Image (cartoon, rainbow, N blue to C red; front, side, top):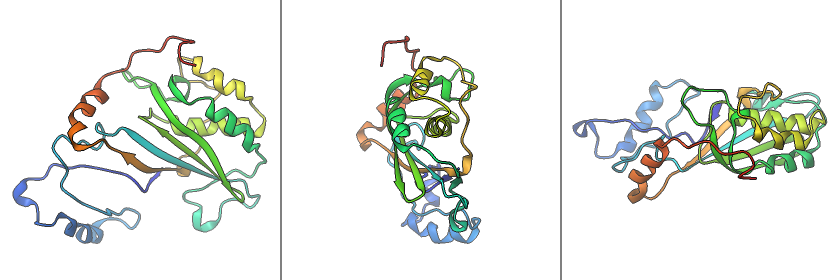
Length: 219
């Protein structure tokens, strides 16, 4: 997995902060490996938490259907899928999952963690032989995006139906029929946060565990 929009926070003693924290960007570049870069540094507002303050995360998953596979310059972030797929069928199946649902069928189980999520965007765009999945939600559970992509590709190939993909929302355990797409096609591209005055409330809401969704209540 890759990230061009990753956000992180760290607690630093006030006396250690330079007048302009952005000066650390250049310094960190000297020590980080070539495939990791910090692009901006600033003082975070009170109550900000990079994980729990987030209201929405945006991912992209990149696939190529070219018979020759991924372009060498994009091979690290593009999955070779040299098969014919029905993009329209993938779009319809993907959009049928939008809304607040229990995505247990698409998630790797973690003890005590909820799999109820609000999927706010899931669609596909194409440019030549490049297909890109755009997936946004208030939060994601483990392996969820890659499982959503794997399911849509199965529909696109005709191995599964759109109805099969929608029916997975009725499952309450990880579905063995859903293949997890390879990790390197996935990128975190943006994280959204609320206004400063809403940070504390958002932190509390995120830490609250969502209860189970009754079957058939939230179609």
